Length: 169
Image (tube, rainbow, N blue to C red; front, side):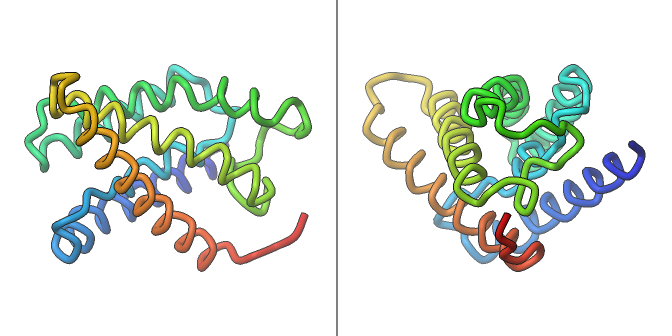
């Protein structure tokens, strides 16, 4: 159990460090939310309340650097609340074990992409809706959410593919 927390902590520190140093300096024109990837990878065995507290802390930490007044904290909280019901809706009980991390090789790439892409897009919609604050910017919110989620997914999937590799189940 402690190994799960250590992996989560190391992933979170790595993703936030890359987010704040590399991505923000190199890719200033695009908004990429790499720090939400550890939230998506947390095993289902961890209590949802603990995951929500950790996610809120991650979002609040990132908000201090972006000066966004709790937007990322709220979106991370919503993401952590919706991730398991959404995953089990997509999974439909195919996986019986609950101690796995929600990423390949424990899941098929197709299941992981379906699970994470919808949640990443939803996260982006929440963040940009709160940032713009009005429905009259619907088209800008939609475009920016799609572009940001595509870049976030591209970087997340490529980094997972590099670190984990491609293993057939």
